[in-house]
Image (tube, rainbow, N blue to C red; front, side, top):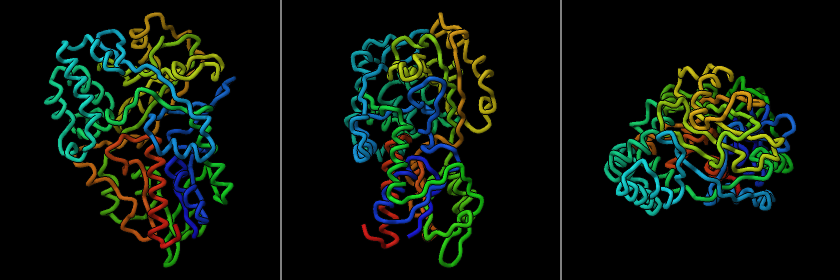
Length: 425
């Protein structure tokens, strides 16, 4: 069977690998010059490792991506690390990744700290997310954690990430963030781009075709097959974001409307290469001061040795942005000018002259917004159209989008295609 996969992110590549294992003729179409979607990478100067355009790690309970890595022969390339996560509140950084650190957090009275720790423990112990998608995170966490904790811890983070949608985010999404989090984090030797390269190589060794830098200009359906850029296929799997699938899929108005119904945010990272570290010890700093123009500061080289990046320090300044946000069209220099005064508030001795290079990446449709009853609106892998399938991060719930879930989704999509097309498993 000839199967076209539109999108060379981890979901598409994982599906391609599974399908080629069963002897299917697969072609992956990717418009970018590199594979991996949000996990794709770039290099600069004397770097020995490539770097992801948006910050990445995985949790130690992210079994799908760990299992795939081992199958690809990358068991020894899995690094398990223990970096520090902190929050920036009241002009200081406060470690916030262990029960003891939560109890030490000065932003809440002692009873509030205990209540916050108990709330986190409750979320970790409760495996039942379904009832939580019927209520907003704001309503539930104000009830169980109190208004002060909501206002000082949870609300600034949701507001920074979801902007105008913050008050509509389902409690199941915030539950998932707490339920899945592990104190230790995983990364790959050579970075996620190395993992993607090995995955792509495995697909091609099994007879799959991967076409990068290839836009889909036209999809035509005949009585018996599809024509994708003039090539003939028996089935199509879309792994691109729903708005893109809707534009190129030739779907009817009702289905197109459904695909556009889920709001999406842009992801934007300004990456600074510096002579000195911006953060001394913290890997991930959530900024709980909403006067700041960014959500997080992620010091990649406080988790991964700077020797892999020419002995320079690598720091991401991250944001999620709604359509029409002014930052989307700004240049590296314009964003740096906006961010620099706030970076100096975090690290007073940081100077612009410490920066040796910087890179800006702005990606549309990067984050679906999980509002209440999201599972009822999320698209299914089987579409209303025969031989056409859809597997993108809109179908990942209640979990936040991530590499582990992209791998899991691609695996499930391949199995459904094989079953639905009456092919041997």
